[in-house]
Amino acid sequence: MQFVYADGWSDYYDTLPGGELRGRSLLAKLFDVKELGEWAPRLSRYKGPSMPANSDEYPQLFLMKRTWGGKRKAMQLGGRMLYQKITGKELVSNGAAIQGRMLQMALRANVPIWTETPVREFIVEVRGGRELRVRAREGVLLNTGGFSRNAEMRRQYQPQPSSADWTNANPGDTGEILQAAIALGGAVDCMEEAWWVVTSLGPNEELPEGARAPDGSPLPFMHHLDLSLPFSIMVDQDGERFCDEAGAYMEIGQRMYQRHRQTGKAVPAWVVMDSRQLSTTRGARRCRARFRNSGSTAAT
Image (cartoon, rainbow, N blue to C red):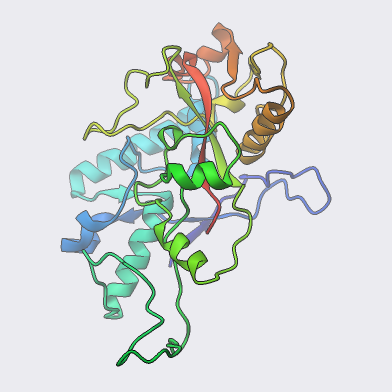
């Protein structure tokens, strides 16, 4: 695995005891997905637009019209895109880079990988009608994500209102393996929590223009970056501000639901902004849509 130090990607709470201003995060080095050969199309990737840039580079890119550092970062990105075109590489970043390298490592180690093999159940009763306990030699690792796409589980475990239509999580985040583990007595925790990210709908409760993947599937805009920019505030339906918009996006989701439990008027919330906020970044016009809360669940 190849990582790079995200120097300057500060801790979410860097001013508290133990917080690190420069950050301590590691990010995956950009990965050429074409190195996977015939396995490349099987790598699950974000369906929306992507660029060969890691998360820690976006703050500078957002300021490319305002700072020399932003202009320099934009030129670096342009150089990478030209490099891709000349060499025929397809560089991916963040989660796709991590998973791409993990898949490559597994293939090199000849790890058996079964595709088109959905898990139906965990078998605990076998052999001639006799009941016995079947144990794996080293245990069973369930690495299947949470339940963002499972409306029934969201109603059962998550704060309300909630909808699977608001999420931008992996389409496979459906929770059935988690349900099977619970049925066998598996202990779970934090089912009411999530990796909250604010997404938006238009005032008519429909997806804004452009909020769909190339295949037509819904792909709500996520606002964990543009929401933190200056010259805007998020308010509930009474016009009252209830969170620090530049704070950790998970905490913003928690604040939304905390306020909603108190007043019933925070989901959905609204963002009030001016022309300075809209001019801070390209594409910010999209942010004029109504903000809602979505959840990539933290039930893993």
